[in-house]
Length: 475
Image 1 (cartoon, rainbow, N blue to C red):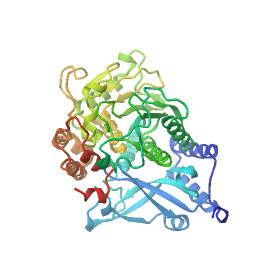
Image 2: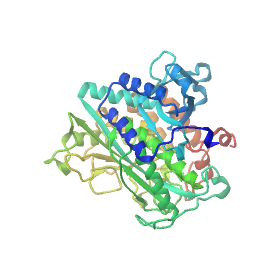
Image 3: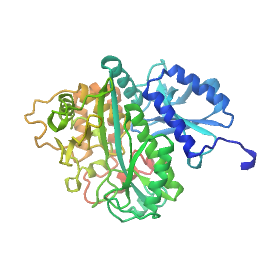
Image 4: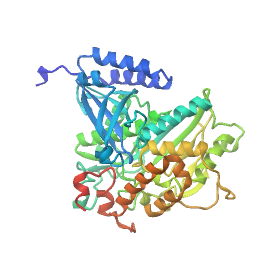
């Protein structure tokens, strides 16, 4: 069959060059109209491309994908409609028609051996019936906020996320958890320890290769503290690119694992008794190329701007916890016995603090929000962190940075805090806030109210990253 087709399949070096060039266009804010013209010409001229995979995320952060035939897309890219009522947290059935616009800046060339020949990928923006950004598309909300900050204050919002995950035996291990009642490790080595050629090391190597080809600009990768746990780090990007890369990171890790007959899981605490998985979120703000977080003479080398940013995060720590820890299972991770960041304090050394001030210099000075789960909606996480850090209310609590306060240890308290908060209403609006709470309540109602010491079947089976209509109807 391969002799009868001639679909695009580039080597990894060629892919990296193309993706880095596209990333540079985003960084330099090349006008969207110019990038669109360039991409449309490329798609027209490149005869070996058969389809364009268009990606968007729902309110809980699940990545959705649909393939458009290239010839159809070239003629209809400004009028791509879909049924929003089929997406959890989007429109009601009676008002279901939504559109997708292509964000031509967020265009990716992908390895054919993992994503198929003859395809490219691009992120989409969800548009409502009136032609404006759809309120339930948090990616669009984040992008608009970042653009406003640049226009108003000349701020560039930067982020990098350290995303931990587990590698388990078998494909779709989460979907079959109700049968096995456990996850099986592929490796029981320790932190940084994995021999060349064992399944965990092979998985990390392959996933890192795919990342590199897709323009992530890798920094380091290694096994993490828990058995079969991994982390693959990459460089800072502007905030929307960073959020897109979180979605791609989890997607490519799952695909690489699947090709190996394994499962890459981003549940925050899939196994009791070992460290959970976090998504440490490193953020900074630059203005005119200068890092606003840096002050050589400041406390911990952090500027007054940076400390003010931290104080606002701490002030609303409980309010935004549900946005940063989005599942029943996430609250198992906020356990102080396993370096859990459950204290609403700031520290340069205490890894149990919600916010850490890492060692840095003029280039790398940043704020690290440690309490984020890897299963949270990345657009919601970064929007909540930056919007709160820049515009959020300031608490009158004395010694705010060291006062002993704790994040909730269960989703019910987190929902109560989120529901009562005036700040979360300002962040998301009444409509989206209500929809998000409804989704969290629906999942929580299917799970044991008390977490206990054993990971329960429902917290896996009805987890938003595992959810499908079939499983939901098993309740």
